[in-house]
Amino acid sequence: MLDTVCIPAESGDPRRVIVVLHGLGDSPDGYRWMPDAMQIPWLNYLLVRAPDPYTVGFSWYDLYSDPAPGVARSRKLLFELLEDLEKKTEARNITLFGFSQGCLMATEIAARYPRRLAGILGVSGYVYEPAKLIHELSPVAREQRILLTHGTEDPLIPIDAVRAQIQQLKQAGLQIDWREFIKSHTIAGDEELEVLRNFVKAGYDD
Image (cartoon, rainbow, N blue to C red; front, side, top):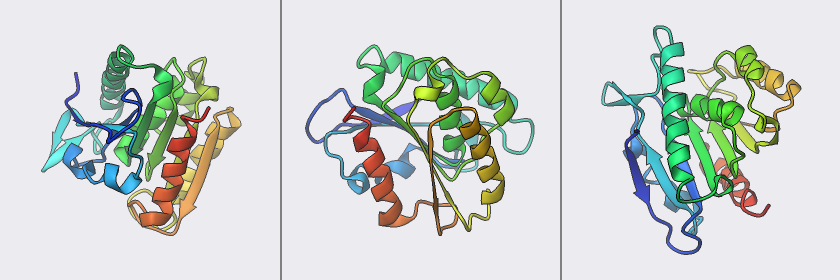
């Protein structure tokens, strides 16, 4: 089971939770700022630590060799984590957020998890083997609410290749809200946070 850090909601429904997946070389500590920044006091945060040590942090898969085994292993662990959460709340109360490598893992869940979540957000990532992903879509994949954002000046994951991948997924019927920001490999301050915040809130209005 993956290690997690829980930050409880300030108020409201204790069943509503956002699962946060960090990027390469980071850890849950890198996202302790998120509850204050998102300004959604009724939302619980579950910060997840990736399984593999990497420099001063952790990774979800091997970026420099064959990523396939790590992606499959981490996807299985995230399935188990979500299934465990569903013992305490319903899938429709769970939002998933991922940054960079965490974004890639969030798209894996969006495509393959068998139950519809409140929403899935990914920032500054890419899609691993999109053709295979499309072939293996779950029965509810086309019903998932998905928001993906990216920077037009991202030096680590250039946007042109990601645009093409997102177009593939849209053509396969995935309901992706794609947003571009003038930014590098980061979250673009208040402007992007407002987009993320509104998407999360809308997932609980359905």
